[in-house]
Length: 511
Image (cartoon, rainbow, N blue to C red; front, side):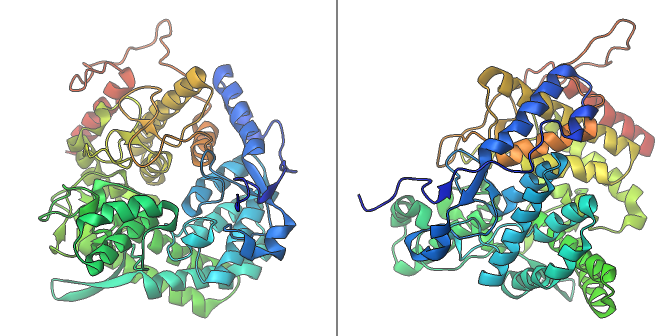
């Protein structure tokens, strides 16, 4: 009786800059996919939220963090903004030509950094002890690439630097390797107590620990996993030096993640670029030096020539964690590698992808290859990870890598489209093994909406819409795909065999 209904912090809102026919739709040649893109564009109107004035006047009455501009929320149970979700939402908004809404969302984050010194996990005060992957500077880069709004950059560069400093001061550690000391980043929330948003579940699961000290360590690891965005996954399990176990074996604060450090490098490069644009030479030099140091650390600690990929590092056992994640190639996305040796890295990565057999999954790339029952594990496929994998390959500029990127994008678009056609919904996650299947597992039912899913699909439609079709097309006189489809999972998808054939062909050329 003492609580207002869910959503009472908001007033009715419809984005003023929404347009019915953004330019990306013109690039989508297939009429069915174009109609779908139009429907996804329409969803922005239903995911928009604007806070009522009373949240600003009486903040003590609300759990939500006040922001001055409207936001696009993920959807479903997620009624507030979330940090890393917003990167793909904002990119989707930019492709939908909703520049004012995108600018407002970025400015909201600027005001939050000014208030808290960093960006919390999400838009509630109980998230204010942990963050999520630091994508504010890349959000600004996305916005500037479209609008060239240098005044916005000039007004807010100090805040971007402030957020970067938070990660440098609070989320880094030193790694000793081959007689050298390297600084790298990790997720690490060590605030006390259970997650406020999941208090009952955390308190209950902590009862397997005997002492209060052990329980506090466990609570910190739960929140650390949440800070990564991967809550939860066997990726953060450390049991006898392996990724086996359950939530009680969470040790994410003792793992150096590949994509976090690739993103930190990207932040440093962007801050150097931004300061150069503004004529701030001293700061340009400062951030360039940080980026160079980070690239060296990522290469020396996380790159493994014998594996052909970057791998997370286990601080406890002082060893690599040789398990597949789409993020293992994320340094290609942020150019966090020696680009003078691009051919070498491409050759290694192609062999690595072939070895993992991820191409047997007809509906996307799985988050891991572990069957743990956690939602960030097999067989779930998540939009941001599809995006990172696709863009990692595409960003190389290599013709073969780009062709494989397209094949992965094609199967993701087709699976999302099939699910939408059958259920009239977009999901936060999907099943990599079932075309059109939505994901499962974890602490809650699969959610509809869905902000980052829509953003990723809109960008893929813009990029590949000139050749995408909703299903495999057979045209008269066309050459059929040769070779047998992979049978390990019982699939006979021609797109599955296409990736296998491409990888085989590339490796033959590189041999």
